[in-house]
Length: 490
Image 1 (cartoon, rainbow, N blue to C red):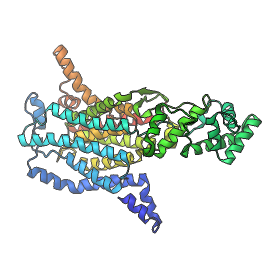
Image 2: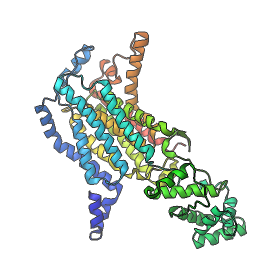
Image 3: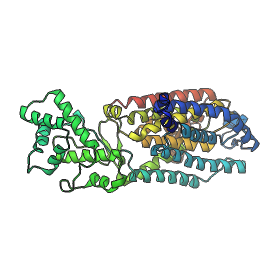
């Protein structure tokens, strides 16, 4: 809302322009989310207590753990509603509401929050730790992932390389000769159309370069600038010159629904087709491919199976955060760290210059994911104000499932899916410990850990709850920093 207010008032108060900057809006969102949680938190905790929405502590299986945690019985749960409500309200003020990636992130946050809320509500009514059945919970998570995956398959958020850069030119001499040939009559219709759409300065430069041999750096700069100007303007395609197929045909089918980004991408594909061997072919259908961290321009093609991949991420991460939520502040702090890392990644991939320099997939609409991450950072810190040891409120499945979904969605929408095991490495360790414990007991009859998830293993080993939480936060922070370092490793 503040963005639109700033745009309306800028003609009268130029200083309002500052509210249109994504960095300013992200900072405002973080601060607003924090303050709202801190101010509303006490009221919500009192309300949850009055509703008797207290935590039930299991006495079965591990008596020693019950002795450590029995003092937490009755602590209000379902505090995740505060995180969700505060985040949505914050984004209403600071977000660019026409950004579809922002809406996708919010929808996943709310959908999984509803699943978690139902689970918490049933537990509260039954006064027991059994809420939704495992099948019902998985169904809710799968439906959420399915909605996101189907949308992304049919509405690409990135369409591959657009601008032609120096590294995209395979052969300068061939590039110059081919474009210059478009000035003659009776030549390739594609080249003729391309040459005709160049500005007069670029046409003159290309003609001079074709006659003069070796080109000076400034001439190459003029040529690339002219070509990229052609890419930005619609109308290059002519069915008499090009045969539409593959990604080109897909973009042309969108016709009136094609965005400016689609136009640039279409023109880039047409130029590649007209200048084979001169301009490098870019990766097609990038929205259904998964980039491999550490490798330059290496992608795993998935096609329609990308939907299943999205579902896997949403289900896995939301459950991993849910498993981690067992100690005061542990899941909240670890989630904040992962969200902060992905917010930084969102800022990088939303910039054409940075994403090009780092060889990461450019997602132009990811600007608002930076604001979304900042809002969650603020509300997460505000919730942690009450959730740190000794906790006054627990997030419950309402918070853990929604935060896990938000982390998974940020990974998907920034096209950095395979960085997730590092960014959210602590959650991987926690969930992995459960899988290993169950597998070991079923196969050998022996347990690897004193108890799973992993945080209980160390707790039963004599570490205080605060020590476990702080050391796990440190591990999570180190892994998140490692993930950011991999952006440069190509």
